[in-house]
Image 1 (tube, helix red, strand yellow):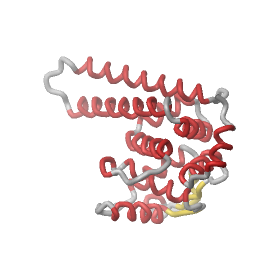
Image 2: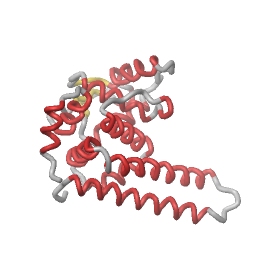
Image 3: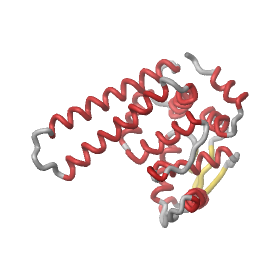
Length: 224
């Protein structure tokens, strides 16, 4: 990975946003003369549109919000990937993309709330709760229970299985926020630890616990 800086992060987001916009326009152009779109065509068009929406929002956010830029810096650093490569990887999976977008918006705002308009994205909330509360270890069932507490407040039913939990934890693993330590994932008995020693987790905690001193320290450690 090349030397990382805020300027590289900003340009990488803009580059990927432009690429996704081009891909979306190419799909629209290709399908413009098709009278009856197939289910696959509709799905491809919707997926491309969703990617553009998220990355246009992300590009706008990091151009105006320092916390968003810093968090993305630590995400890329933690994931040990080239910025554009990681962003394109996340964009491929809509379940990762919406949760990623939710987390960045929460960081930019300095708080987060359960979002009834995108309940799938909101399933990343539990890990933010755990980090804020200084939790170091948890199970999939504890993660689902934490999500259930948010769903019940919003008068929504709890998840019966572990699909949403698994999707959220896969993203957390990819970003280096958590590590799998054992247990049967398919049965909901997976066990995880929060990597509280890394700078990304420290940054997330500083944001959501309003630790301005720690946040400033981590911000100043980032190259412009």
